[in-house]
Image 1 (cartoon, rainbow, N blue to C red):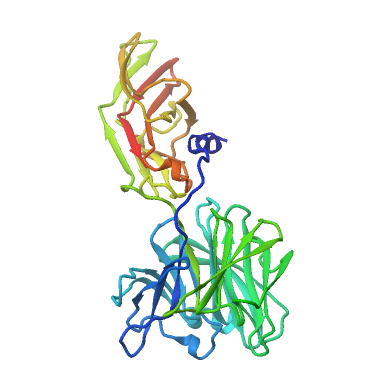
Image 2 (image 1 turned 180 degrees about the horizontal axis):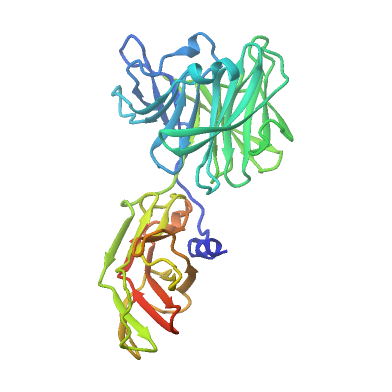
Length: 442
């Protein structure tokens, strides 16, 4: 409930109007012995690319349905890519034939290929949980097609969470897969790669990815006259992008089971073997988080009582407070913790308009400083929160505050301050600490 109330501070406003960007692994015209790379393309514009210097080998030359791409929303700059055998975390920098930075490499074939087969498509889904989902569509020459569910605990730390299997012909494979964070559904295409007769787009809930409840026969004419090799979804415009390598076509989705055919876009001189949409979250300057002022203290009712204050520190985790960062959280560290002698807790004051005090508030035992201006309707208070920890003055509070991808939030400010309390058990004595204030800009 507290997180829900906090999310009201970031209520959805104006729709995003940024240009949709596509990316994926494929063949690129770089002058090398192994011209594979990562492609970036604004829809229907000339693509740009970077070379992978042989790190992403063109395994799709052996089996053209291999390969996949997905974009990591929490990092804001990392892409997940595969050539079928290996899974990469890479940073595309398509300014010509320079080298793409590879952050991590997972040997999928060595660890899981014998059971699940090779990767044919990837999809990323972040629903605000601790670890977002990475779905892998796979093809096994004997066992058929799977969708394998994994969780991403960090860009270089993923864990398998489950898998499901399709009872299809062994010549059928999933060529493109993507996800919608609004409806929490997967969209993926399949076709017979040996005796091609058209692609079918399937839709399924993320927690039952093999139990699809919607089928859309993808028109062969005028654009997609071959097997789909990649799929991407722009959740802001509800547009699905399907590619057969050299040509990409858009489809408007009603988020139920109806699609309207959109324009065709050439990808030449590059050829996609996987596709995803780079989130169009608008960014001005990187988000900032600044702490200012000094803590202040008061007590009640005995002004002579010696309170054990901890000089608690406001902060943040999960990356900068930037538009689209669903992993952002406010933190409080170095707090007291509850014990047999006292109970401890914390409240949070926020001003949703970013209005800054500071104001001196008189109390019976002195005065304290309040930093976020208490001006209606922008002033909120939340709590109490119970610090966790085992050592006094080493307690901590973490409050998730996911920031949605909304253009209206760029440059928005939020002012805040924590109030920490201890209530002594031996006598009815309340000790209060007002931390320094913080001001964050998105």
